[in-house]
Length: 305
Image 1 (cartoon, rainbow, N blue to C red):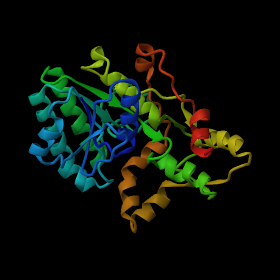
Image 2 (tube, rainbow, N blue to C red; image 1 turned 30 degrees about the horizontal axis):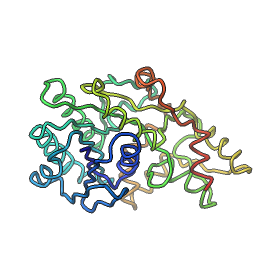
Image 3 (cartoon, one colour; image 1 turned 180 degrees about the horizontal axis):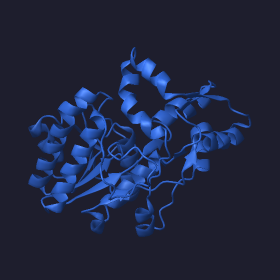
């Protein structure tokens, strides 16, 4: 049995499809209100803040995928994320389940330095601090050989369907809606983005590769591009010159005075002022046949129905 915690989210949904296609039909989907993706999926409704419910959801699992997401609410993250992960770790130990932990890059330094798997965390902001604490918990368990686990880390998403990200919201969704595009902070800094289905496919591959455990992996990405270059690709697909405006940091700060969502974004925005260079060579060398989606293909899939 392979179990996905947070199965309704953008990563969990794609992960379930990949597991079913290439690895197993024995899939358990866990969330507060899980929804079937395949007829054979087993559904378990669970509040992962409750240990007994978490333990029941993980019971009988060979592999557990942690793709749990919470709303962009710093206070909620600080109160709930650590407790959820503690429950999951304890249950995995009880049932001898392997744990595949999906991670992001919030805790990395917001500089133009190239990010590697061993980059030292430098959290700034509440959400960044929480993500650093979660990753440290998993790494500590791996190093102590208390838990067979693996960390799968990804930068910002772009992609189809359920994908939620600043880039999708401000650029690609606006292209589809025939609205003016908005660029966060700068159109000339390099961005490293991951195609959402690639992240899920790579995580499924790592989870089903026994010697991949006990370490951190950067999930595979295409080359880094500027937003201006991404929009040039979209221009060719749409066969028109797309216009855009650049939303400077001070405008976000003004918006944060009146909008809670804008306030929650503030700690993430400094990373858009500099090149974001996320290195995934380790994965590409270990799994050379893995097909990474190029921006040209990904953007076309988003825009062309």
